[in-house]
Image 1 (cartoon, each protein chain N blue to C red):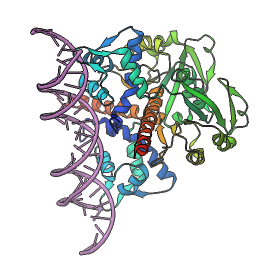
Image 2 (tube, chains in turn red, blue, orange, green):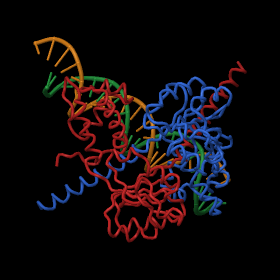
Image 3 (cartoon, each protein chain N blue to C red):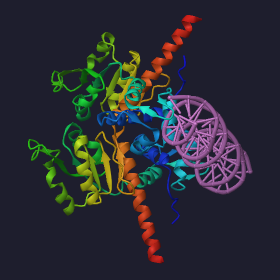
Image 4 (tube, chains in turn green, purple, orange, red):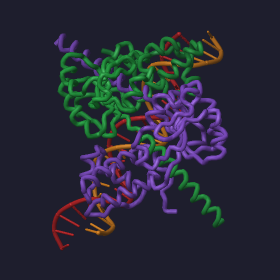
Length: 223
Length: 223
DNA sequence: TAGATTGTTAATCGATTAACAATC
DNA sequence: TAGATTGTTAATCGATTAACAATC
């Protein structure tokens, strides 16, 4: 009831970073931290840290700071990490396989329930003790199993068909690694991870920087 | 000289998405598009589209719209894609291997020059025709080879040492897949890709949604 | 109590959207 | 010319930062 409604997306996107840095602090046996000290480590302003945390509750004590253990647990709860998340991977290519082997996910209580692929050479093989199934059986699988998050690692051409199945079964979330955007209005929450977008952001910045340098050089030549 | 200086990061982050959608339009043989039509497809407002594009130049014609081919080439240039980028992958684990095999990178003229790892079992093996070298030779390799972007896929504990080598050799960009943030002040441009941050954003949103639903249900029960 | 630091409001900054003159 | 759509300025919106009263 006292829950603040509709946390801004900008705040939500920062929460995982708080979580990582709080983990670090715990590992370093730091038990108390002020917003100013955390600011130095995490790179957000102390004002922003206090604002961010306050959109979820009052986790600190005036004149004292934040108890790291307590704050860590609060953030863990905010991220929904006290629940186990059942996930399946659809598409057992490079990325799908890498994610299936990604041990960090287990630590976050993300449980890989099944892997699907269309390639007969892959079907039947196990990755990280999870067998690869025929993607043709995805529909019936989802009728019988409650899955929280579907991880999509199939090529663009396959996305549309998969999407329809997921919508039909009202999967809760989609973690999308395919290069097309998935956006299901008013429905399933989707997080798109576009490798190439990230790389192109980098090349764009490099290009900008080089442009500035060349411009500066030409100005220097004139002067 | 007529270059607008300091494009906002928000705009730069959107450029790869323009690039993707322009590729689509080209594939669909669409030759002209208005900001309003593009708005429907890409999901930005037409106003934002015109603003974004205008921070780089005047690419459209009033009363007409944008020539898709022309705009595509402009955006390609903005993203620095007319240059070839020489990259190396450091860390040949799950993610490193997946990236080495990721064919989309080749299409963007990203050329994989070398792969490094510390694991003796991997050294000497080739992935996608590129041999894995001993990470101990990275320093001398960088003395002899001009590399644009280093892709970091090593575990947290290895990052610090790698970073020092990269700074020493003034690599231009870092594409970081390790779970620690890399931020080199005033120096190498870095793009951090944190899988688990992305996943936790998703679980956070799921958690928020569930919270809202439960609250609604409890309100309904009272009413 | 004095000092410190939060929680929170107010001020600023930047990004998005709206509006419209310029012009194809 | 009339209609359409850009380029660009002005208005709005939201996010960040600054400031300070509350309080540990």
